[in-house]
Length: 47
Image 1: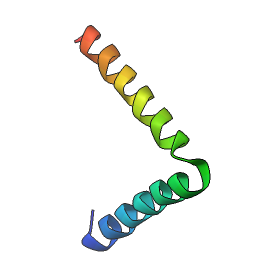
Image 2: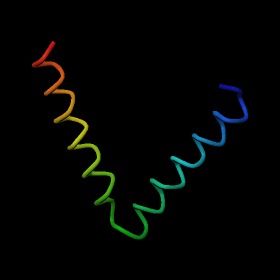
Image 3: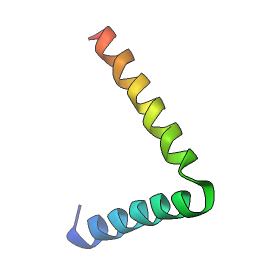
Image 4: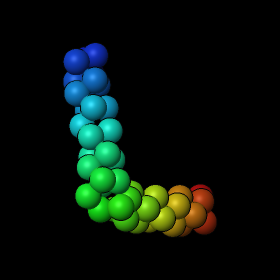
């Protein structure tokens, strides 16, 4: 991954977080965080 692609990807992610916070009151970010925590717990169980 080149630096240009990494910077563009990081700026896209930050932009999506800001838009979610402004337009959706952070509900999407909270949902993704909860699902990621569940996935980590599920993966830890199967390890």
